[in-house]
Length: 161
Ligand code: ADP
Image (tube, rainbow, N blue to C red; front, side):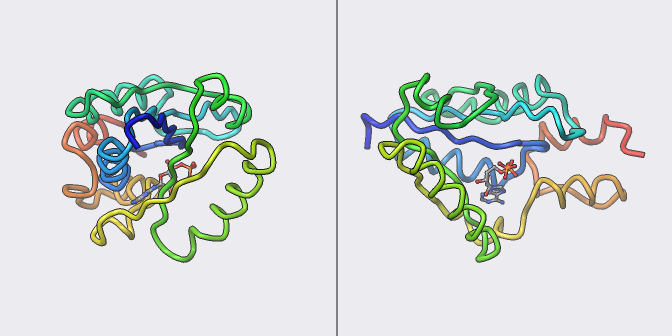
């Protein structure tokens, strides 16, 4: 699939080793991978959009075919703009499936030519979520091994109270 351009969209509000696992898998399979951070005005994020972009740039440095971007609005519109043919999403457990299926089907309805591809992370990351990592960090628990070292440093520097 070396001629395929894929988009990996998400909030990435604390980049985890699970995200990184998926970036690595995606970078190996697809010719190009755009990791794109959703600009979501409703949520009160822990990391600003710029911080999330910086974090993703730092951790994806080993893969030259990975680009970091930001998007807003409909994913199908953004995919058309970037001329991407695939959306990459991660599935950790059955609990992810229902929501992801709904999104994939709706995106297919909006653009039948856009395929959603799901990948599973290594088993050791299958319980990992940004929300849990934020929670553990806020409560002063150990986050080593859950997030890349650069992200761990940023989490420590944040006032989480
Ligand atoms: P969103 O708000 O779009 O779910 P996230 O940053 O939480 O944004 O997740 C982005 C994508 O990464 C989703 O497809 C999600 O399933 C996937 N993902 C998140 N954590 C993991 C993980 N530990 N392993 C594999 N995929 C993951």
